Structure formats: C-alpha cells, structure tokens
Image (tube, rainbow, N blue to C red; front, side):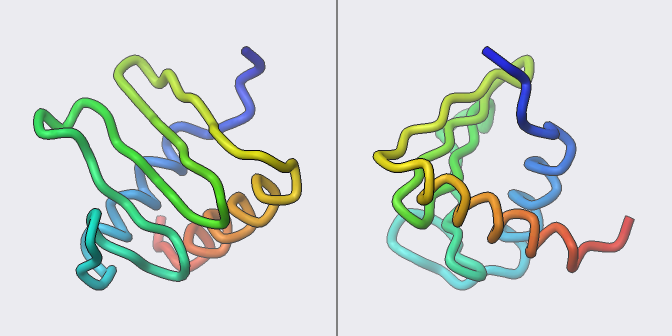
Length: 87
C-alpha cells in the first residue's frame, strides 16, 4: 500500500475532533467528520463524505469509499481541520 497519509496529521485531527466536536451517535463530529475509536483505543475511525477511514496500530490504515471524489472531499475536510491546529 502506498503511504499516502501523514500519520501525525491524522492523529492530531482525530484528537481535535474528539476535543472540539459535538456529540454525535457514533462519536464526536466536527466540520463534517465524525471521529470515534474501538473500546481499547488502539484503532481510531474517521468518517465523512461517504468515506470510512480505519487507522490502527503501527500506522496501518484502510480507506473505504465508492468514488475517488468522495475521498478527495474527505481529505479536503481533514486538511481544513488540520489547518486550524496550532503546531
């Protein structure tokens, strides 16, 4: 699998959503992205724009989506949230 994700960015965005997002059925939602984790916290999930991202231990990940345009919209939202963060 081509490493197309910046692991640090995904983790920062996930944490920001968990801290700043509104309660939602599955977790917290912020700017159209929902964030939640499995019970042990080793696997996190980001969901939005028809995309489901599973991000796990050792920086492994899997995208699920139907159209490439969905993934592009999802990543646009993730990058927008990342642009709000202080480094």
